[in-house]
Length: 496
Image (cartoon, rainbow, N blue to C red; front, side):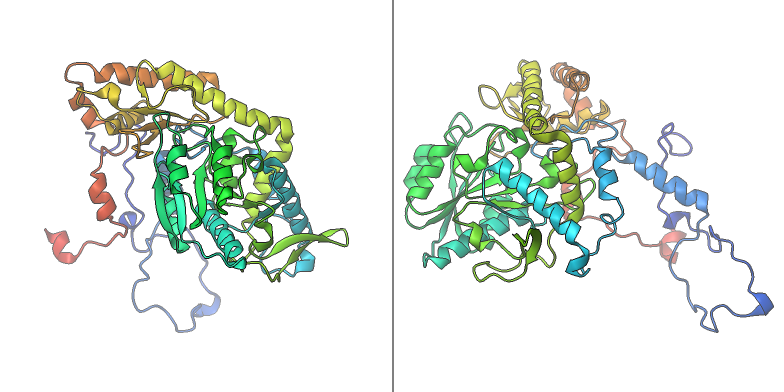
């Protein structure tokens, strides 16, 4: 430990409040003329509670904090099921153009005709790519899109006087799927997977009857596998009068190659902030449009975009719509970025997005299959999934591998998810990483695998990360007892 607490150029950075010095300021105002009181006799009687700081302190503080953030601009994100990717600067420039970057949701409709036309163009791209006739643009993100889709399904069922009570959800689904169904008042029943990691069609068939409102299925699924019996599953659900909800979180693996509408999907949310360029969690907020089949389109939430007199317009009233799902019509910044991404790639480029994402994931799986155990046989789609059988009797866990990967300069992959795979390591290289970057990641993973089998390795792995600004935390306590607020030391505490 150094005298300063720093680790080379990695500074131990105190909070702004801990750097406070009363009277210090980054602004030097001239004295008022004639001895006048600027505040008109309304001076504060007690401290404001904001830290006194000079300008260099503030700049250095936030610069140092930014250096602690792992970002897509710094390196690869192997997180599975998140589709982290490069965020083209072209998209950012377009989103900030005058007339786009300064839009306000309360502007009069006649002043935002260009924005409505842009949304209409985006809707055309989405419906064309998905092979479906309609799309609701307003949902805020994936889970909100699921809610929109299930509410649309419920509205369609109620319109025909068919009050169904059950929704079927595969056991490998995202946790938001059963939560959404429960929010909409449905009972959830789980569908098991086969040894191939795909939905057990026989188990699905056994649960289908006239009480099933919908099947919620992710394809490619959360194990990174294509549901190759998806059309038969859709046929069976439709046969009993139910609807097929597709979770489109992994759409980047099939975009331009497979149209969900051709698979029998009735409703599917698309994470614009995943599939169409904006890294998940960066650039915020999200956007989760829902594409709809002909049977569900009339019940989509308001407002709709329709073309009248040759011009796209927002329709605020529709007798069949189930209502609004949010106050305004979606996240305009995400619409702009996504459309810029689509138009700059074109149809052929988007097809290559899917091809490259699948190629990269299979390259990683092929390179690591002798070091880590693939969870399921055969090729994968956009992400590869390993379990912890290769770590048996080493004393090293999946969590240890993830923590040690930080010391190798990589953000950890998704771990312990999906829950159906013991000690899961879920890796998604995405379509944007080069072979050189993948080889570097593969080399780091191979080194960790070898190290895990060395004598005494478990103790070293349990201590990882050792090169990060903070050592390994007690994550359970951090989650259950988070400290989210700084409080100044009391006089008695300071004396101690």
